[in-house]
Image 1 (cartoon, one colour):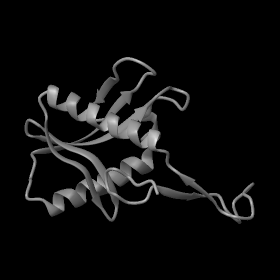
Image 2: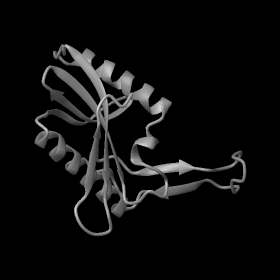
Image 3: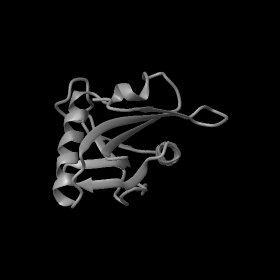
Image 4: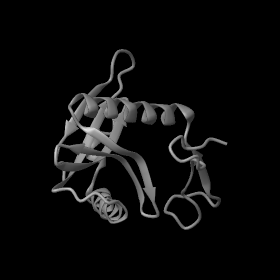
Length: 150
């Protein structure tokens, strides 16, 4: 069984199934490949390195609650930044930041409120960032840090 490296939970997602338009009679189960997991984990490591090199201090990584997961919580001076990391090997599906839509932004805001509620930290300001990581077939990854993305 393939498990998520960040949580140790099974990486199995149910898609399709009876009642879905164009779906077969039985459910389809898709298992995330180790290669995809490795690319995501590599992207998060690149993002952390980039943020630290930019002078930020990482407070938490892969923080989970019943609402979901925050990839990175980091201090940027007196600002607490909640960072969503999106890693892509290509641009077939658009830029990584395009994957952070309204619903994901709403979820991250709720997660940030929960994180602040559970921690003693009272930042002067809170910011929501997206860190895009482009992983080419060869060579170094390229990291773009979008501050105050939403």
